[in-house]
Length: 179
Image (cartoon, rainbow, N blue to C red):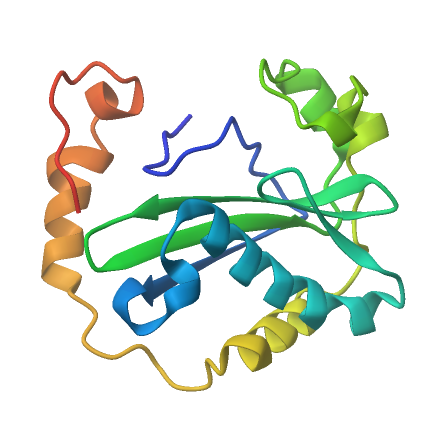
């Protein structure tokens, strides 16, 4: 079990999940000024990229979900810094939804559209090849080039000093570093 730096509830990671992460500079885009604006900006772009692949209308539900016919296939979260936002999420492609039912309790906070449904009645898989989704997201974000100036040394320092520590993952640290 690992804790993530962003908000949101518990996420089951298993075969059949596709994870992504975006790091966007906030001063370059007015649509990233607030949490709600960022959710809308990014999820609307994802919705537009995925709708043609699915042949169905993808909807933005709750604060941070994407859904087909009222069933969630993508949950997302963000972490905001002074100059950038980390926005990341998961697409359910071929996940055994019984695992979610088995390992996760119902969340204490639920979006209205969930309507109290059990995991298996609320979630759905896209049943698409992950390569198709990766291509669609790359095109949507114009992400054809390799990242520039990735601070590998600082990332390694944060992982070793904090994020791989049991105390941080189990919320035992009293002070937290920020990125």
